[in-house]
Image (cartoon, rainbow, N blue to C red; front, side, top):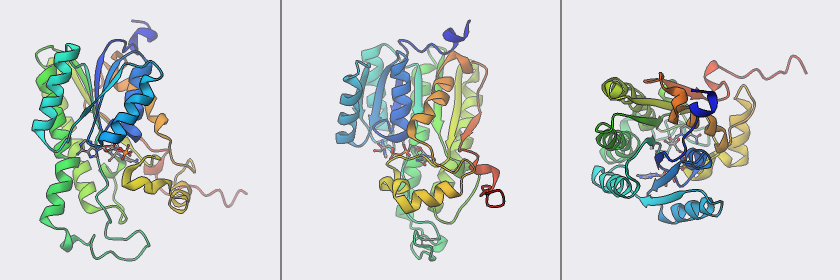
Length: 278
Ligand SMILES: NC(=O)c1ccc[n+]([C@@H]2O[C@H](COP(=O)([O-])OP(=O)(O)OC[C@H]3O[C@@H](n4cnc5c(N)ncnc54)[C@H](O)[C@@H]3O)[C@@H](O)[C@H]2O)c1
């Protein structure tokens, strides 16, 4: 295979959960721009319709399905609809995820009462683990159900650098869900390897998306995040596209169970401010 063939995803059927916005939308766009038939799945009907319309104007083969990833039933119905219409499902991005509110440090820097460990409610835990971890499980289950009989497939889970490190300003249940999603991805990779299904994860650092109501794009928040990043900036959603295409194509045929960090070096440690050199 030459390198053009390695990255060829033409006519692949690709599902992206959380595909109406941000990182998921960019993954879907990358696939569609390379000739895949893409189904964006999202809970936000209005945003989904808008995203599908925007891509269709460019003659990209994109459609939408409204789902709630915290419900296996909801996902199963959507996967069946897509498989019935498109003839199968080749690539699945398990990407949907939400912010879970304050961590033990509030956004103004004070200690948060709501985010304190002892005040995390059962309702909060069930709701957010249900989306951020349950959603990944359900998506892996549906992907496996459709890919195993065919004997091939690519699954890409969006985790986070929160799988590897902790900070006080992000809700505690987010870390628990993302770290568990990483390990769940690896277990799925182990189980599905013999069916020629590769399962990997993308672990983003700060991307300018709509998560937490677009909080990362608020200028003073953005400045703090930029200053703490070794590359002195946060990423635009488009910057996920190369990695998405790699993990969705034959170019990654011998990569499985890997979690690839895309964070501008954030996990390396505190940024070099350059102050001594200026
Ligand atoms: N933006 C970042 O800085 C960042 C960093 C690390 C990880 N992530 C992860 O990236 C993924 C995508 O987030 P994003 O930053 O693009 O955010 P985003 O808010 O722009 O997009 C997330 C999408 O998921 C959808 N969604 C939420 N709950 C859903 C549900 N129950 N069922 C179906 N769809 C649902 C939303 O409607 C939205 O369209 C998430 O898993 C997030 O945790 C984001």
